[in-house]
Length: 221
Picture 1 (cartoon, one colour):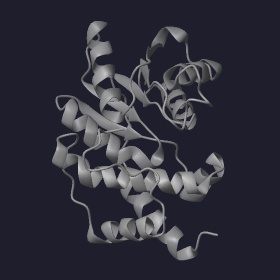
Picture 2 (picture 1 turned 180 degrees about the vertical axis):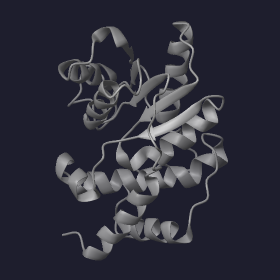
Picture 3 (picture 1 turned 90 degrees about the vertical axis):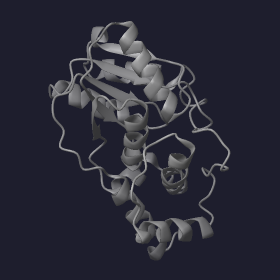
């Protein structure tokens, strides 16, 4: 049983990860691969709204997706978007990235190989990884405008959609750790983290939500 106090800490981290960007038309949408097909749903919806004429889905597999997405995250995202009415002709698949940094670098390389000019990118991620994705993208591709988007869900709605509260909390704690650790390693830009967020993160770690933490010498998976 997860206490009300713990959920309050989770909510703090959830809110902090939201960039609250105003979504507008961009050169391309990049959907970051993960265990959550809602990223593909959101990307498809934004395409239908006219927010991007082209989509890149990026992602191989990870320990949380190799069974549920055996053909790779990007390919499963592509299939889902096509089911939702997105033309196959506007979707590019980047099937090799295994972390957020590779998502950005490999997507950029794919677009450059296709000679597609990019001035702005609609960066679609899980709701609790907007800030991490933004900080990584700004570091690795600084000369384009980044606009973050995710499924417009509350924390309880998102937990219900995933069906695994501990997985969501573990992933959110892991995303927060990376925000604090990776700028020192050159993986993302530095961002100011309020003391209240650090305290909530530390309490969640003390309560055992640590399965997605990385060692300080680890890569950016």
